[in-house]
Amino acid sequence: MASRLYQWLDGRLKLKSLGHTLLDEPIPGGASWIYVFGSATLFLFLLQAVTGMFLALYYAPTPDHAYDSIQYIEHEVWFGWFVRGLHHWGASAVMVAIGLHLLQVYLYGAYKSPREVMWMVGVILFLIMLTFAFTGYLLPWDQTAYWATQVGINMMGTLPSIGGFLVRILRAGETLGALTLSRFFAIHVLFLPALMLMGVAVHLFILRRVGPAGPWNTEQTQNRSEPFWPRQVYMDAVVIVSLFLLLAALAYFLPFPLADKADPADHSFVPVPEWYFLFFYQLLKYVTGPLEPVATWILPTLFILALLFLPFLDRRSERRPTKRPLVMVAGIGFLIIVFGLLGISLKNLYAIPKSDPSVVQGQKLFVQHHCAACHRIHGEGGKVGPDLSYVGNRRPDRAWHLRHFTDPQSVSPGSIMPKLHLSDQDKNNLASYMLSLKKG
Ligand code: HEC
Image (tube, rainbow, N blue to C red; front, top):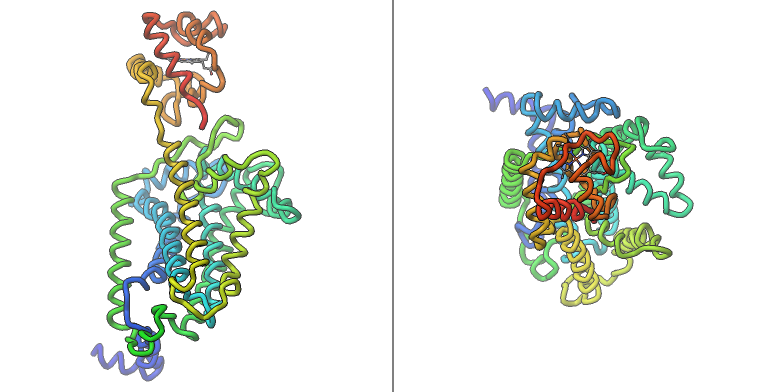
């Protein structure tokens, strides 16, 4: 029965020759685990597309409802937390996969003639992926989303001549608001997927026209070649299934909480970008004053142009890494700088002022005396009193805190904060903790 149906369909759709075209593509030098990154990237992109479609069923792209709709997905929708988790971790995974794919092609010199156009399309796909990340980040409409996007848009504004134009397109007004959110949503779910699909189609079309590059050692290529099916398909499948299991585990074990709902009036919030933008965030901290444009747009533009035109900068047909020292040094240098900056940035983010025992003691007192019933610190705690996340910046004076703890009304008339009946030592410790709560 099944075979008769197959015969019938084959007579009409030419399935046999289609399977032949899809699966018998020769791989010079044979199948290898090093070639899996392209398929992994494609799989992750498709996973983002599918999880995104399901999220769009419940997500409401307006400032009034976006945050609540995500809360709803997270807590009410059947398996909503899981789909959101997959989409969240998938976004990170796709960056890793695309980065490894790019590195492999770079190392193997696979961008060289006749694959220049395929490389350039690939670089554009990478830029589209970054735009996906940037636009998706705003959608939950929490504090981090709001303020990180604010920073990103402002940075784009520093671009000469096209900066103003880009800001107008993205922000759609003087401030970040309802129009911005619907723009970001439309770009994220309509424009970018369309561009991405076209780009992927062109990328794969060229791949089939010129074939995979194979090993850098061309003698190996001439002697041996193997069809895509079955070994390369098997390797790709193993990687794809493992990736899915990894993402499912991340979604299950590491739920990704929202920050507080976006508050456009709260200028004290210091946003932290996603990890794949962190190295850049760190760079921006070092380059200030008149040199700022160097970091905000000159370096990124030069980097993108160099990447895009790499096949024309490194034109010799030689592909062996040992024979391309300049390209290798440039690549390794770039990686060292990026990972160095990322490391410094992560270290700063997770450096808790553990060293000062007075601060540690103060932190304990803060918990013991239920200060969090009224005060929030980085999203945790009540909203009766002011947010204390950065109280050290706002109130840098120890004496003020000591007076305030003893009698809040003496420095803040009408305060409803209860007087603290603590020893001077403990008040001092609590003040140390307050002073330690600072930005950066
Ligand atoms: C019943 C609610 C309540 C509790 C409990 C409470 N506070 Fe407050 N706190 C307030 C209110 C309201 C204010 C704002 C008025 C003022 O400055 O006193 C405030 C202000 C502050 C400020 C000044 C913040 C600023 O930005 O000016 C600090 C510091 C502070 N509280 C620390 C603490 C600590 C430490 C504890 C726990 C020992 C605590 N609070 C417990 C309600 C509370």
